[in-house]
Image 1 (cartoon, rainbow, N blue to C red):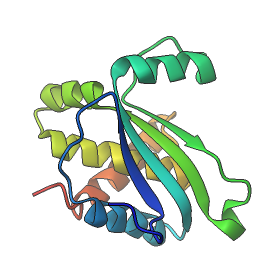
Image 2 (cartoon, one colour; image 1 turned 90 degrees about the vertical axis):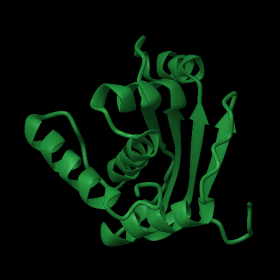
Image 3 (cartoon, rainbow, N blue to C red; image 1 turned 180 degrees about the horizontal axis):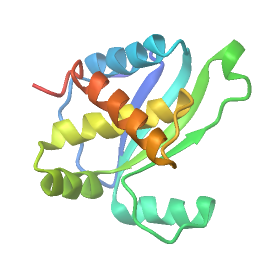
Image 4 (cartoon, helix red, strand yellow; image 1 turned 30 degrees about the vertical axis):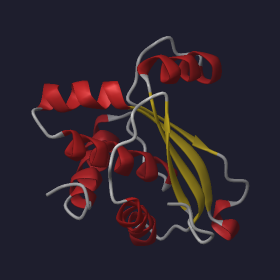
Length: 149
């Protein structure tokens, strides 16, 4: 799966690997950044357990809660050298959210993947207006996700 030119990487930590078209996923993530006028230098998505993501949440963010995604912007100068980031996604949490919102796992995974890159493109989701903008962007990009059929 790994090639020298890859900018977006996908790993599975303590969860079963899911059979996705990773080349298509990378192209999709890069297309989101491109549409938002950003460049990705290197981005790593790590799909993991609730427990693993909870440990990260407590250790690095001092939040003792479960979450579906945590995004770490590792960029030193994203304007000149592109975005560098690690994005951690809890498969269990995404699965539970898919059930809760009555959507497929692939649909919810697409939303969360888009959510992470949108944060790195400068979108926030604290205030109601920001949340509405974020949800609109997620929905827009999910329409072209290779996972959503």
